[in-house]
Length: 435
Ligand SMILES: Cc1cc2nc3c(=O)[nH]c(=O)nc-3n(C[C@H](O)[C@H](O)[C@H](O)COP(=O)(O)O)c2cc1C
Ligand code: SF4
Image 1 (cartoon, rainbow, N blue to C red):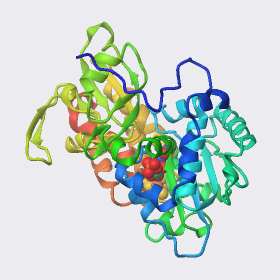
Image 2: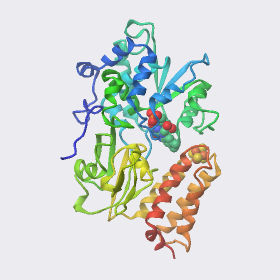
Image 3: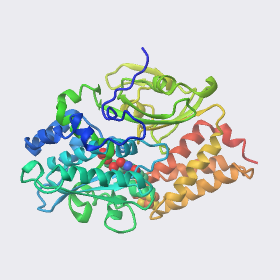
Image 4: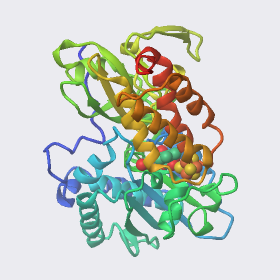
């Protein structure tokens, strides 16, 4: 059977370049979930979200219900919600689809999530480069306010919520939740130590804070409307719902596709929905979850046992698009950006480009990350410019091996994993650049 999309979040994105206005959103049943939510107790909504099995779409795939359950509700301090709309991971372009094309889905999600968590002030931390998205969001919030879906006494109730949209200044590290919080507080976006600064207890202004991704929040009205149990039937157990996957690189039809988690393989995604690789060439490598995810080789085989004990023996084509399957083969679904490199790709050049990005974006607080990311970028630069030195391949690998686990935030892993995996999996391509 031909691979098909499962359009839930993207259902209203029917016209390219058109942003759904509130009239269209209402006509399509929009804000009915909010109305339903407001008639429910906040804890009942949180239970539905837990029951849905929704996992965060920002990168780590952390359970949304579990994240909400960890919020310190006894501190007596206000609870904040931050929508992470920083989306700066190379290869990732899904959140901007929601912001640009269906902004009310996000606003409704923010209001529902805020009501469910007794939040009175919510922020959208918007990537600085999203100049257009920022304007669209502001206009949509005003449309929602005019209908009393945002602001004082929503739907005539005692519940009020203010939403502020804050633009970043173009730093990738401000997508990391504690760096984001620092930036929102008006400081340099330096990630904080965890512990003690887990946002659920000590987040924005040292108050309990929920940080959720755009796509995560856009799923909340869907869960409220259909109920957590029904939502859990979409996708597969442990990997529920759909995922908006951005596919780029060597494919005939790059774009953002919404697929049911675990119900479609990477082969069906790339060869089916994306129309295959140009010229029928072979896949050399796939980066499955944004540029920080470990790569998969086109000719690699993955063997092992699934959690239920059944054996698997997969090539890249067979790997289901979901969190657990990608984790089983040693990589991750990450930010939902799939980058395809065909046999014409120059692997060292590709990773040199990625390494340069990370060296530029390291915030510089931790020596292994600040120096290591730069050393890797420099070594890759000389190797790809005809000045590779004997032992550079091992040198690269040893730097990449020594960063993870030694830094304040997971950027250390993010900058090391792509180099580690490319050098391990395509060693010959690097060794031949040594002089
Ligand atoms: C270096 C780095 C960059 C990140 N960038 C983003 C981002 O742009 N957008 C995002 O939603 N999450 C990003 N994250 C993950 C966030 O820290 C956080 O886990 C996420 O926003 C939580 O939302 P979720 O639970 O809905 O997935 C990043 C993490 C790291 C370590
Ligand atoms: S790991 Fe890198 S980005 Fe994260 S705090 Fe340390 S230096 Fe900054």
